[in-house]
Length: 214
Ligand SMILES: [Mg+2]
Ligand SMILES: [Zn+2]
Image (tube, rainbow, N blue to C red; front, side, top):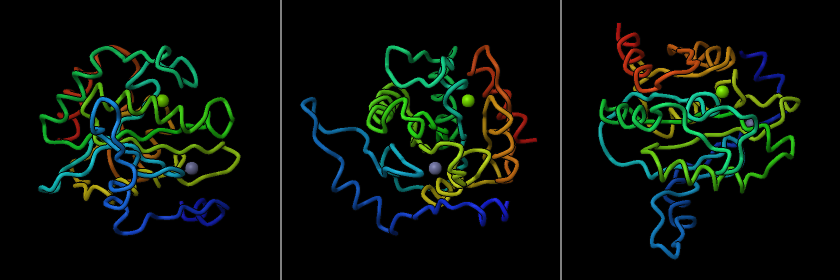
């Protein structure tokens, strides 16, 4: 991991300590429908769209991969018309919230680096996800694999950024992904990673909570 990070030419610039308040002031725009319920917290890598972190006790996180876990992976999904939640995905997210978890999405979005869609389009789709489900934040890496970005899974920088931003209790956190690279990222980060394929994501989450706590 050290070698990987050291050999990468991509540097991740950490946001300033007060980035959240600064961005909240600057980017929590008012829409015709009223005040936005979430904000674009940071563009770039890792980019972040999400809600303002409420005050409160430290919590564990459920890290969800996006494509193939929360939505059916139709390949580089960038438009709302191509978005299809997996079975009981929203119920699964609500369940994890009720169980006291932060719900954090960590997603490789190389479609941006490949110029198949723009960061703008990704953020519009993220806004839709945040409206539909009580997700706390979506972390994304827009880079092409050739850029060897340490945030791109199996790299762990997105997970590390989320831990720092949300003050997470990692002893009870875990990840659900659909690819080996998701599971590798979880293992490198020191949390369990569970591989989802199909079926009810809600049932899968219930089982995963049990497995993660034993
Ligand atoms: Mg996936
Ligand atoms: Zn990146």
